[in-house]
Structure formats: structure tokens, C-alpha cells
Amino acid sequence: MAVKRTGGYTVQHFLTMLVLVGGMVSLALEMCAERLLEAYFGSSLLIWALLIGTILLSLTVGYFLGGKLADHYPSAQVLCTLTALAGLTISLVSFASPAILNWSTTGLKNTSPDALASTLLIEITLFAVPVILLSFISPFAIRLLSREVGRSGRLSGSLYGLSTLGSILGTFLPSLLLIPSIGVRRSLLLFGVFIFAASLWGMRRIWRFSVVIPLILLVLPLGPLKVIPDLLYEKESPYNYIQVTQLPDGTRQLLLNGDESIHSIYYSDHRRILTGRYWDYGIVAPYFNPGFQKRQLQRVGIIGLAGGTMARLFTQVYGPVAIDGVELDPEVVNVGRQYFDMNEPNLHVYIQDGRTFLAATQKKYDVVILDAMNQSHIPFQLATREFFHLIRDHLSPTGVVVLNAFHTRDYRLVQAFVNTLSQVFPSIYTFDVPGRLTTEIIATIQPTSLETFRANMAQFSPMR
Image (cartoon, rainbow, N blue to C red; front, side, top):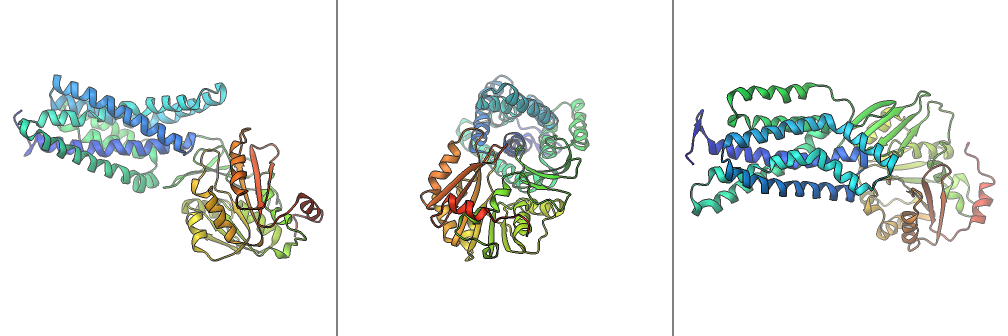
């Protein structure tokens, strides 16, 4: 194939640019896809496995079909038309995804199909087509630029290396910059524009003006990533998809990553103390110790601070006791302060991983609250025997650890926590929160009994 020039640049220059941008957009699409699915299905190893498997399957199909098309139609115009179509498809995904994903979650609730098959079908519907089209780039580029058999290996290696360099950009650009600043759906639109613009050089002149289509899409309003009633605030951070709702009576609720569980709650009636949810049970945990009195509580540690509901409860019940709240996401902390009145002077906030915090601090706690679990994601580093040994090392002689586990009427997870905790603590207690799919688990550093707890609770009052 003869090397052609376009405005001082050769076809090779344009093709190598297309290879670079294609590699970037392919990985960026995967990163954005995970955030989209996270808002509806949560973040878990299963979701990542399904997503990566779908992307790899799409790449396999694309490389195979791309190689056959490149041999039959060795034309830069054909390639650029296909990649421009990929750009339009990616742009449209950002608009179509909420409707498709909402339909999927509704189907899961109403008909209870197999979650694995349903999620995989959604991923294929949303992301397979653009990934297949993008994977045409490398086979076409090798076919169009190969002029000597003796140099084909060097050419192939250079192009795949360039594509991988683009993939590195596509990994970090959306996760560190674009998604936290402009959101996942507008990031998808932007990457659709990138690949579309990189394809214009090989398209017919009349079709080049179609770049206005994704540009128009880029400025259109998109609305929230997941539409829910009474939405007050929405934010995408590097760690979470954050939503705050406000009910007609003024009650505010914190939702993370599309999970239906409420991570924090705030009542407009400041006189109200108890929430009627699992947080209430943590404040009575010290009463498992014989003869416990309120004044004995000196310091509380909360791993998974969220919007500060647990910190507010302990402050209301026990007074200005020292509380260390650990939260990984600084944006969640900002939301807690702005929307959930998380401004107690006795609360000291640490923005870091809970296990890292405990490993570094020398403080001792009378109560450690582990509230970093949700329905779809359990940080594995916070559920090991080693971690519970670390908690034990930071408890006072009458210390108590409290955690909540979701059971969805299947208690295997609860039992797994009990089995692990039993290797570290002498006494373990579990009880279901009425009307909720939550089991509260309490472990004490000293051997204790329910009789002691009942005796202590006889003189308990949530009011100071």
C-alpha cells in the first residue's frame, strides 16, 4: 500500500493516532462501565468478573471479525467509518444506560431471574457493540501499514505497544480526573467525541460534518445517574456514587453506590434520638459488661463514619465522649457535614482506610463500631481474623466491637462473621433488627452473658 499524505501528514500518522485513541477509549469504556453498573448492582468481585469477561469476549469477537474485514476491505475509509460508529454508540450509551439498567433492576425484583445471567446480558447490550468496533482498529492498522513481511513483526509490536499506552491513559484519565469532575455519563460522551474526532480524517468529506452530533450530545443535560424519589444531592467521587434524599418531613438519607440500604439518616426534629434502625443497637453494646455505667465510656471508634449517624447517637446518649470516625471517602465526609449536621466538637474525623488507621494509632477504645459493610460490598480487609485481632489490640479491658451484616434471609454471611469473631473474642451475640434484613453482631473482649446485659439494661435510658 502506498503511503498517502493528507495536509502534510501521512496515513501512517493518522492510523497510529487512531490506534492510541482507540486503546484509550477501550479501557476508559471499561472503567466507566464499572461505575455505571455500580450505581445499580453495587461493587463486588462478581460484577468486576462479569465486566472484564464481557470486555474480553467482545475484544475476541472484534479481533476476529476485524481481521477478516481488513483482508476483504483494506480501506482506511471503512475503518474510520466503523470507529466513528463506535464513537456514536458510546455517546448514546450515556443516554440509554439509565433506562436499560432501571428496567433490568425492576426485572430482577419482579421476576427474580438468575442475577448472573441478567447482569451479563445488560453488559453485553450496553458495552459489547462499541468494544467490538474499537477492536477492529489494530487488525486494520496492521493490514494497511504492512508493506514488507520481514517488518510485520516490528510493526505489529509497535502498534500493540501504542494501543497499550493508550489503555494506560484510559485507565487513569476517567478514574482520577474525569469521573470525579464531570461524572461517568459525561465522561462517556467525551470519550465518544474523542474516537469520533480521531476518525474524521478517513471519512468522506460530507460525513465529517456529522461530528456535530456527539458535540451536541455533549452539551445536553443528562440528569442523575440513577433516578430515585426525593433526590436532594448527587455526586460521583473516586470511591462512591453518592446520593442524598430528603423526604417530605425533612428526613435526609445517605445512599451509596445505588445500594438500597441507608448509610446515614438525619431527622429535622433534633429532639429525636433513636432511628428505629440498626444504629440504635450499637449504643447499648457497652452494657454487656458487668456493672457498666455511662461515665465509664471514654472513647469510641467508628470505622465507616458515612454521614455521622452513629457519632451523633453516641454524643446524644453519652455526652461529649471522644469519638474517632474513620471514613475512606473525603466527599462522603463533606456530605455528612453539609447535609447531616456532622459537626459534633467531640468527633475527630480521619480520612483513610479503617485497617490502616488502626494499624497506625495507639489509642484504646471502649467501643469499636464497624459500619463499612453494605448489601453489595464487604471490604475483605475488614472481615478477616487478622483484622479482628487488630481491633482487639485497640480495645480497653471492657471493650466491645459491634458490626452489622445483611442476611437477606440467608444467614451464611452472618455465620461466617460469627465463626471468624469466635476465634478472637470469648463472647459473641447476634440479633436481627426488627423489620430489616440486618443482623447486629456484638463481641466482647471479656466473657459476658445475656443475664448481665438484661440487668444493666434495666437502668438504661437513651436520655442523658
